Figure 1 (tube, rainbow, N blue to C red):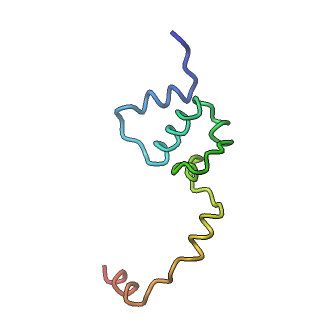
Figure 2 (figure 1 turned 90 degrees about the vertical axis):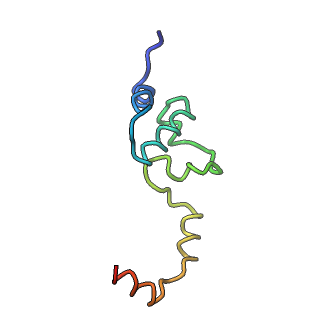
Figure 3 (figure 1 turned 135 degrees about the horizontal axis):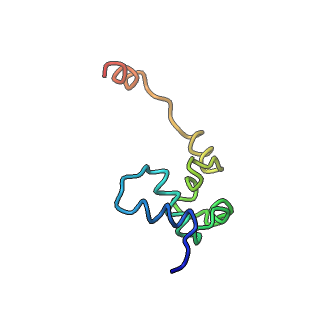
Length: 85
């Protein structure tokens, strides 16, 4: 039997258990990159929907800043509804 590295073991241990979204994304990225953490960090598949979250937090790239600059400010009506919750 072939010896598993720590990431393969983490992947196997996570099967059938409840894990966080960030950990699930990280494990999927490790699976995609042959369980090589450095390959996840160096991933060039920027069109992958998980790419921005591969390191456990959102990568702040041009798409992130573009979205932030286009966000509309919250209206006073919405603010008032949130205060009344």
